[in-house]
Length: 198
Image (tube, rainbow, N blue to C red; front, side, top):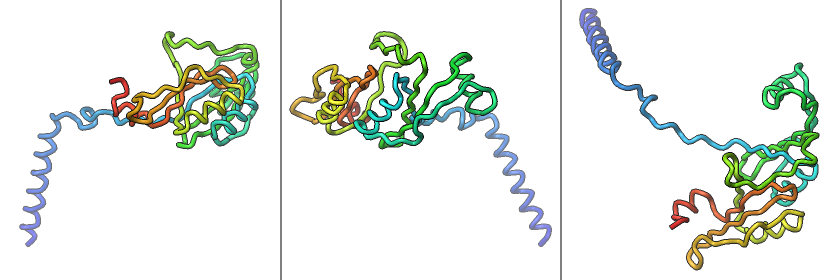
């Protein structure tokens, strides 16, 4: 009985050794599998007045506050202080930050720097870099009206991708501080899987 047990164990070990040697020359699965799609975490927007921006993005856009506007000081004693020096360099002294979130849990970070008050954003879609962000709301018309009533701008007429066929609509707007963004009536994936540019 002991001999039989030893033979079975030896046979198993030889089989495993042969399998591992055979597969050691084959590509690693981690090297051939395509990378999985990453999820979107948050976007950061600089504004001239953070309290007014929080009011707009909560009352008009419906975002909710995770952290109220908070003053961050330039210092090397805390983790946040060190991290901000890494990001912004030295000489900024203080800034305010607030954390909001959208209905689908995407973070919306607002910054106010002392120099932000007199610097207005410029709309430069042809320049390389971030162009705009987009939000989704089935009531495009209603949201555009609220944005304009709150001091923002409607930059174009509300357009349909499939007039008379499908209710997919969009519009570019500005918040009251000059940041351009887009409103979609339906999800990005649904809109483009339906062939928006055909």
